[in-house]
Image (cartoon, rainbow, N blue to C red; front, side, top):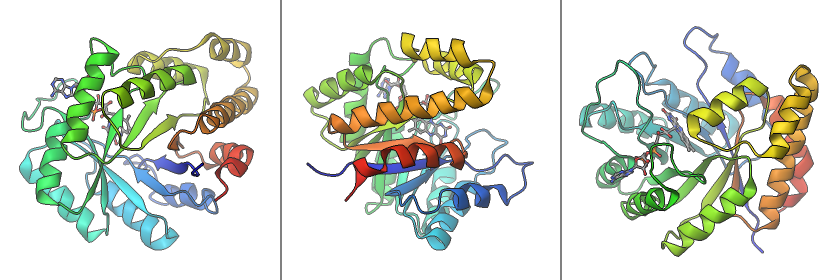
Length: 281
Ligand code: FAD
């Protein structure tokens, strides 16, 4: 059996946060040896569009870890995407996670890249050598009428040139296995990494689940209810929950695990120390 991939996601610090905070995150992740670290991209007009490339460059050159830079489509025209790709070239980034982005209130859609698949096709055309990743949704994307509809659109995205998928967070592995069966049956044969987001706060889990239309299974709901008033206990329970999810996913032979670190290296390290033997090469 092949060893599953293991990758991490970090995000650029908020504009008013000290620049050094990303170093605290990356220093805290040292020694985990992920296959890559991906860096998110803020797509509002207030976002610093250079941050993703700068941080990806730091990860690659100062920490020696391959990176994947996220890039969003909805509020970009050709010029903005060309500028981003030039920045990525200068930063030595060779893999991009091409995303549509969420709709933002009070923002006019640009209309050039209405779906992620449009951005995928454009990057393929402009940078034929770049690896292009895409996002997928084990419970279906929140705008989709059904999981089957969403998977049909996912197939279009993969056919446009995606070579690797990373999933949205989910809390019930059976949802991921159902999605995987359907995606494979639809002819989607690229590697699919399972996205795991460790529970840290009860409110944030409920908010995130509502925003993404993700289910909170009964086992997790009990855990949130039981430990909501005790932050340390909830974090410990969340680390166990994520570790158990990963153990089960790896036992099922998934292609890889993508951990959303939320820039909290402490929780990430504790999860890694629970599951590291499962990834021995
Ligand atoms: P798409 O693939 O375009 O899908 C969006 C919706 O449109 C789906 O319902 C889909 O079924 C439908 N659709 C797709 N193609 C068609 C078509 N041809 N016709 C009709 N319907 C269609 N957001 C950020 O702003 N920055 C980030 O860095 C970021 N990173 C992310 C990383 C991961 C791993 C994930 C899972 C999400 C991330 N997001 C990020 C959030 C993402 O931008 C949102 O989930 C967004 O709502 C959808 O993006 P997408 O690329 O999946 O869109």
